[in-house]
Image (tube, each protein chain N blue to C red):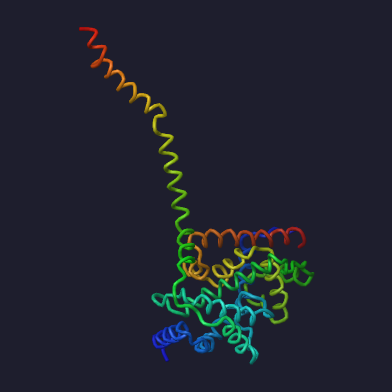
Length: 199
Length: 110
């Protein structure tokens, strides 16, 4: 089934669900579960991926009456719902202070020193160093707000355009660009401080 | 103490970006109860109303128009301060002078 067939089929399922055939929604969940899980795992800690993906589908179901079939199609709409669910995950986590801001260990600092000393990017992420790299990344991101975190991941790490990120987050393109720039500066400043203080 | 210069900063950013991209390779295999969990919650929510919720639409539109409304208010505020504060008095004076010329004053002067 190609994309056009998928889209036509999605519209049929949505109409059926809106007519009261709730069980038909399972067809959409089956079709897009891998897509949603793939998106969620990039933004949310591994332990919370399944629950957040579940939340995204429930949110999509509740918002289905507001879905307009014209334009970008159900997949793009569901992607936006998923990203906003991930954003809400971080907002809730920060609000309830569930985001751990641990201190970096000597291994993490050694990894950073090695990275900034090496001329090439190769070899930075050997298997042994990957855990350190992941911890340093999470440590840095945990110091940002939910908004800065999401926009930084989408624009600077996933390299989406301002417009694409704006469509996913439901913000204006100008807001995304300004925030992405500021978030990057904030992250640089955080690492600058830790490097100046401790390396 | 070490300063993080532009090159070092770029190298660190690239390394962090690579680390971030590695998340794509994490295998997530949802448990067999995952789908059951999603559908049971959806069934609990039940039948959706296909009718458009006009109140939520109104709310959305209101928020969209708020910046324009504030800008308009500011503009009107500026426009009002530009108008001569004694404008009405000047108009009243003109009328009263005309009345004097063409009214009783002219009659007694005859």
